[in-house]
Length: 72
Image (tube, rainbow, N blue to C red; front, side, top):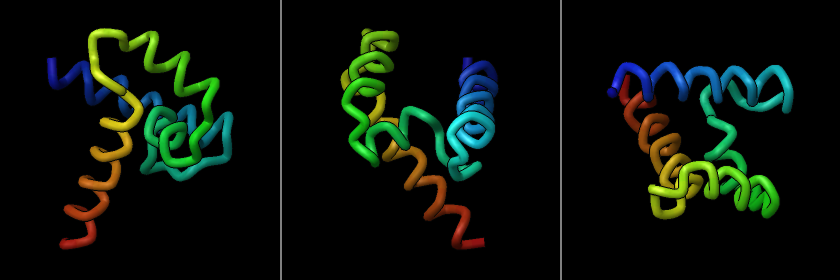
């Protein structure tokens, strides 16, 4: 399951770059939370209805990953 999650996350990051001219290390969900895009927050959180505030969690994972990467 983690493998599939990583693939979907990579696609989200790629879409963030291609369609939204965003940072390649940030998912659309994380960016939606960080920039408080209310419409996309509602849509994405509705898609991931089984997770409590998916976008907030994605943002925290993006930040956590960045902190770990900066230690290298």
